[in-house]
Length: 214
Figure 1 (cartoon, rainbow, N blue to C red):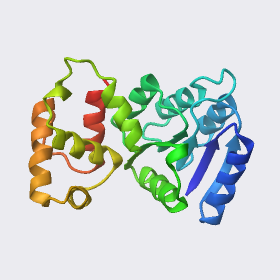
Figure 2 (cartoon, helix red, strand yellow):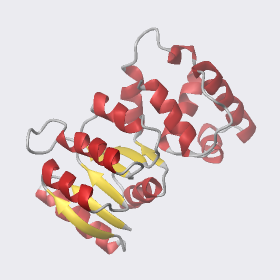
Figure 3 (cartoon, rainbow, N blue to C red):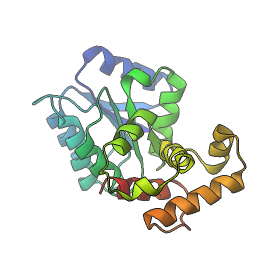
């Protein structure tokens, strides 16, 4: 796997390079600003990118905006956002393009190397890896009249676990219910949100997130 990194914190950037190289993942380039990262990823499409949100030149949402632009140049480019912040606008745009291969993890909650590497590989394979806190913030900030209000508490739990990238079997284990019960909840969620219920895999998650963030 060939990966590019965009992270302005030198210690974290070098730590990520060392971590990925040790795991047998080739880091082709690592940048401390969004402009250089975007120029490089435009010229040479890697297998995945790991980006911070707040980077030079403005230290606002430059990294996330660069990731969105990179996916416009290379549709479906796997992007794993590793940040201390949840930026609603561009997070919604990143999640809502329906192309797959998206992750958003909060730095303070990535406590295990194995979890981070698993998330990166899942995203590179076209799946999703969403931090539960990111999902929670995106859902809480919805309008009062949003269709999400029609979901039951258990359906919200299922939706959140779907967004994290879990399959039906894992969701059933987490919630201590049968896979059949999980499938019923998913069908109900899709019906209430007006989404096709016959899709499988990560695309159903992206469809739901795209709807929630429209």
